[in-house]
Image 1 (cartoon, rainbow, N blue to C red):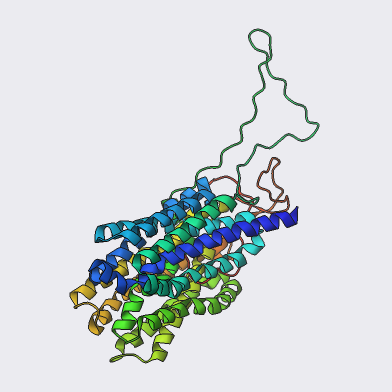
Image 2 (image 1 turned 30 degrees about the vertical axis):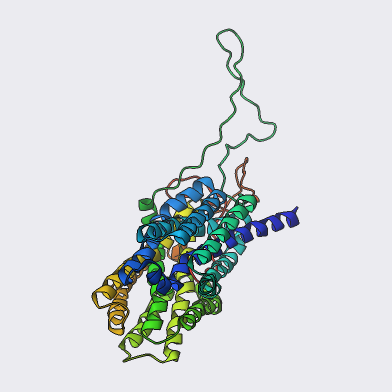
Length: 496
């Protein structure tokens, strides 16, 4: 029985992982095809940024609804709908010959992409014990980023070999296959948070005798109806948790620079300003994924060793990224290759640094509200990314397009967002430590919002957990969940 359940768990995980890989692949295809897109549609830098801006705005706006949808309808439906939306979006982009139709295609891609990450992260604690959740989350997130490598090398070669229409059509049908796989394989797991059934009377207890009716007959006894799990609270209630705010701002400050570089402006910047070929620039961007794979275990160990100082990880990654960008932008003329490699490596560190936010969010809220909490954390980086994309597009257009001066001014749009993120991290971490001190002093801040409550489970438990697993009480008065949030190494190179 255990072997069969393990096989099923890994089959579900692989199907969800493939859906995540394809979502990242579709998200970044237009970034590596940026120069081809300007020729395909006859547009400039500002219009090109509008494509990716629409996609990212739709993705960011869909994070909270996606979390609520996954909590309500499950990951299977969400992943299937996601694959269909990605198929329609990339198929539309393949045949589009106008800016308006291509923009609609990117909106559909953003909507499909928004459903994936929260669904995949929600499946892991449903199928695996709590002690293995952090490790599998880490593996899932950095394996998912291989989709970026697929778009940078194989897709770019396919684009140059068979043309725009056929290349994007192949990408569209690949997403249709992952949608069918998700529908056929993904299921709700045995560790899923279920409804809390009423407590059954102990064996041998005397049953109450129902009263007789008006005609002397006893009415048919009513079956006790199980209490339905309370719907997840809306985002303002979640936002009041200090750990969620820390996750939001931490994800924002560590992720958006990497996303802006890899989604759109990295290849044009390296080609137009520093003289690299398109193929060399795409290969250099794949170093982001390699760096994330190498640095993720180290950041995981640091976060696990010092769980109350995870805000320091956010601040260190932001400081390192801003420093390297400052040196590069101050460099006269074309930068040497080693400096460009350093930049890409530092951007790669931002990936696993941003995923620390999901561990902070998971440890700060009860599991039955996990979907909306992770959506709120993922919203951090994806709310800053469209802002920087839009500002850079406007600045590039204002300063004459793809030239050294225009890019130098455009990349300065990152600094106000870093300042906002640092301020939010400092204030949120301070609020968490105040809450921890008021709650009892010695407890780590992340555990204040959801603390294990010892004791046996009530009878009628349908969650699939054993009776010795602790329950978690919702401080807001919600139902009792039987899955305590696991705390451990953070999860992988690139959130979302």
